[in-house]
Structure formats: structure tokens, C-alpha cells
Image (cartoon, rainbow, N blue to C red; front, side):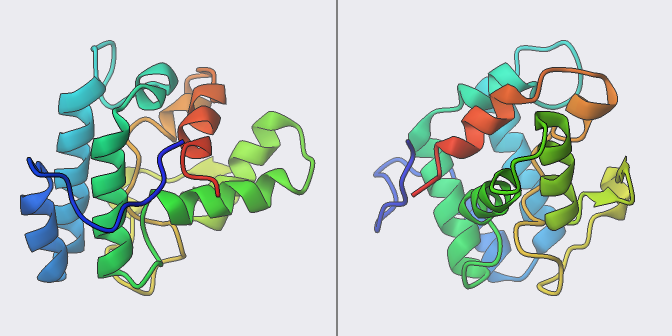
Length: 160
């Protein structure tokens, strides 16, 4: 489990992310988050992280990213906010695929039954809680039929 920490690690790869978030540059911060995650864990295959790669990202990096997003958005954005949305979706006791889609709807990544494309993301504080950062590969998992249990494991790292 990756629980939030009160101070960033000594060697902090999220300094550029912190600066972008402080400036309210939500889109640039989202892109920087993706860069950090992909540099850490992407082993190739397609653009973004697959479920297994997402589940293997180091906790220290995840905590730092989550802390920065949460602090900049008063808790509205970040992996912890997304984990809360997933927990709420899981409480509905739906089949796994429907749970994943309900999570996507809650964070604004699903419109009707379709996963939105990156261009449809909302880069402002009025976006749904958990909308940012966009986890690369999260929509691809359903579209391509990849297993989403790895993403459940990813978000379980942020559950209280």
C-alpha cells in the first residue's frame, strides 16, 4: 500500500510537476505525470502503461505524485481521489467490467458507455473528483480487452 507522506523524498523527481501544479498548468502537469510514470514502468507494447506495469510503479514515486496533485487541488485530484472513486464503484457489487466502467464514469473518463479520448479531458478544477491525472492506458484496457485487475491492484495501493 502506498500511503501519503508529509514530506517529499530527498531526491524528488516531481519538482517540475510541483511547479506546473502550483502555476495551475493542469494539462502540462498531467503530461509530466504521464512522463514520470511511463519512464518508470513502461516496458513497451503500446502507448501508456498496461495493467501489470501500472501495478509495479514504485511507491515512492506514486506517493510523491499523489501528494503533489492532492495538495494542488485541495484533495480533488490525484491517485487517492481516484482510489476513492474506485472504492465507491466497487461498493455497488457490480461485475468487474461494470465496476471499471462505473469508476470511469465517476472520474469523467467514460461518456455514456464509451471511454473518452485524451482530447476530451477537462484540465480545470471543475472537472470531476479524480479526473486528473489521467492514468495512461486506463481507457485502453477496456477498449482492447486487456485485463483491468492490475489497475484495481494499482488503486488498492492508495486505499485507506
